[in-house]
Amino acid sequence: MNIQKLLKTIFEKTNLATIFLLSLPVNFMLWLLGYTIVPFNLLAWHILLAIFLSVVTVKEFLAIRTSTQHFTQAILPIIAFFYILFRATVYNFSGSSQMFIYFYHAIFVFLCSLTIFYFYQTEKIAKIVGIFLYSVFLSLVTCTIFIIVCFSDWGAETVVYSCMSPNSLYLAEIIDYDAGALGGSTEVVVTSQAKHDINLLIIKLHKDNTQTVYSGKWGEFNYMKIFWESDYTLNINGMPYQIK
Image 1 (cartoon, rainbow, N blue to C red):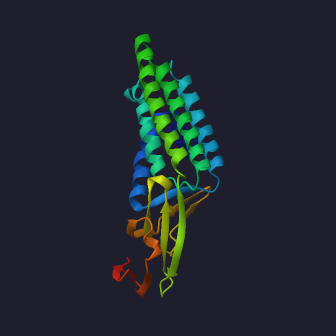
Image 2: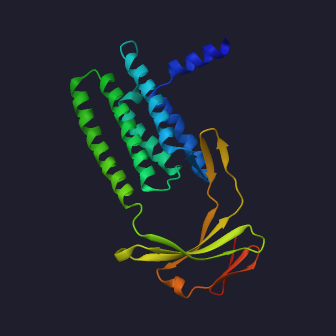
């Protein structure tokens, strides 16, 4: 019974601002620890998030007449922006289609926040000015995200050569990044074969085990030589690099 009362109280006190603000330190800690969020099904995951945020938005909307305006409602679209930004830093995108799904999620979050902002305002002038400013802000953010999504797959990435360390703990790869007229680069990337992923029902926390050991100009891969001197020492063009 106490658990039911607790859950009821949490639901009654939960609003969009609380959800967005609580997610900021969580996402920051994940980023700090090197983890990214990988849903087993990105579309289903964002549909569940959309349903949850819709329920919270409707509940908050119905409570407008019986509750007083809080400062967070006045800046809710700004809080939503930082929520979207921090979530993007800990998401592991594997293609433009997944980025488009996240793009639609971002638009949905902004619309929910703008709805609550509008109906919590009592002054018509504040509503008009606020919606105008936030709409301009939303348009700029939308264009920025759209450009990032469209150009995220620009160029080609090719693994030219790879070799495993003697203890089979690290994989070294020479990668050619060809960006066409924009140029490109050559990188040596080392990936740890140790797995530190954490499975949490419908999502997985993935720890990035990749480190860039060397970065140079495009075309260097044509004459680059790499080999392992020992379990933790990679030789690149005659120069030893310690791998941690």
